Image 1 (cartoon, one colour):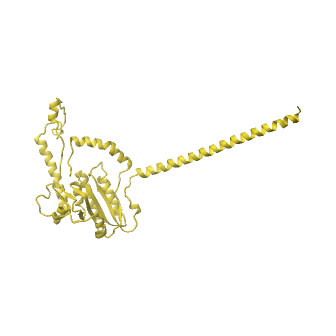
Image 2: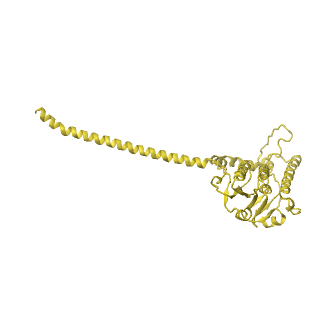
Image 3: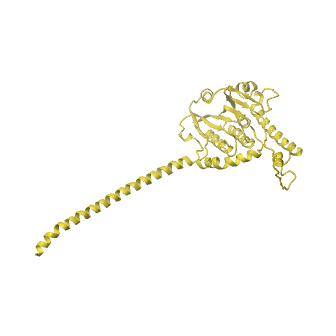
Length: 322
């Protein structure tokens, strides 16, 4: 076989190899492009997820106020038990009210309340803040609007408003203070459990649920409750003034319907938020300034604080306006 024959024989094999190599290279490039597109897709998806999570996790301190245009009625919701670890805590509510009053488009503010009460400290702080804001913005009225219930600490907050409105079936009042707990002394005796309590200070074990009740401790606790009750009554009288009727049960802790509360001077009229915005403030557009707890705060409250608070309340609670 000559050299010419060998060259002719190798040509098809060389072409075949080249075709195969080209196909392999093309397939590799195609696979790389496909993998690159998927990487870009998943990166974009991860970015969108993280961005959405960030928006959800960040606290919304001023509700929808950033979207407000023109004159409007500002709304702040106080919903639930008033406590430091709840969404209805003093810092949140005060932040919302501050933002509502500071907004240049606010014609008036509605504090919509649906609360059985709670901490006298938190309620008192909100009451003080409302009075301060009203003094700083004398031309911007603030109205409290009651939903289902505005009792005890909730009413403590409401009396700082210019006027209070409720539904005829709303529950209002309950101007009183309580402190509750349990005593386990007899149960411990029955099962043979010995209580060992060591204190420095004669009254450090005040109202300990595992020790026998002492008359001197009960008297002291009652004095504290009476003092807080007097503060509550003073705030109600300061806020309501001559509108209050002279009724011996007014500060007894009783609760009344909105209709009864109107007759007693506890509220100023029957009406909803829409009614107040439209008829009193004159701006039917309502912009929500209610602050909300962020994702991590809600998670902590649900799985951590809630259990701790449940145990604490089972044993003893401090003074409560509820």
